[in-house]
Length: 297
Ligand SMILES: C[S@@+](CC[C@H](N)C(=O)[O-])C[C@H]1O[C@@H](n2cnc3c(N)ncnc32)[C@H](O)[C@@H]1O
Image (cartoon, rainbow, N blue to C red; front, side):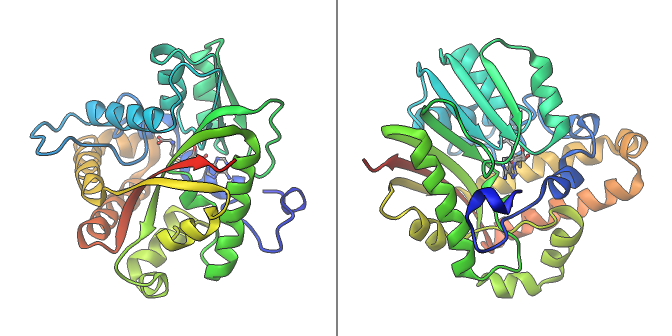
């Protein structure tokens, strides 16, 4: 990320190199344990659903954000941290959106979305910090990217400064009165400083998601204050337990192929990471927030 374009006095989150360390392990690797939509964030399970069809729960999540952002039938929609393009595809194929633009820092993801080769989808290998849109947007979604926007060594007030910049940009890019839907992991019942001391957090920071750290709900609220009205907040942490259970099952079921395409060390690393994350959501150290914002003014 480019500090010069951000006007920030603090360093921002994960660099392109750090993001690529994680996401560019290879598309084939992720295909082995994600569902067909390649959604790499918490799904939305229906209440009391017995079904374990992850693809259906991911589609429900995608449609939830499209609905919350009031993106259906709009002209221009931005997806910040678009991953392998699940939201972008759904916007243009099922929700009549004229132009869906996605930002990612992962080359493998950008190539994947490019290969969809849809005339109404544009993918950019660019951080939101450096992005300068040529026209305003009618809706914004951002799912599972906010966790990458700050580094672990920042203080809470420094994190808020980065998040404020994010919300200011989104405010600037959205047309008046428009909506944004955001999903992020957040710290839960324990203070971030306490969780950071746990061996699992150290492992995740060093080996899984370098240069990244999650927010607290209060930090998001403070950063958005005055420019976005928070309309709804949901904490669906148990939905992440279910999603992680399916990912873990898939990873283990494809052990031999995972080892063939990414190596045994990667298999061991991801198995540990998915299991520790599952425990975090189960115990409430980690929350899964889905927030709906309306632009003020
Ligand atoms: C966990 S993936 C989620 C992808 C997708 N939204 C989904 O739900 O499947 C996080 C995404 O955030 C992107 N990302 C992280 N930091 C970013 C930044 N500063 N600007 C733009 N995208 C970023 C990554 O490249 C990746 O595409």
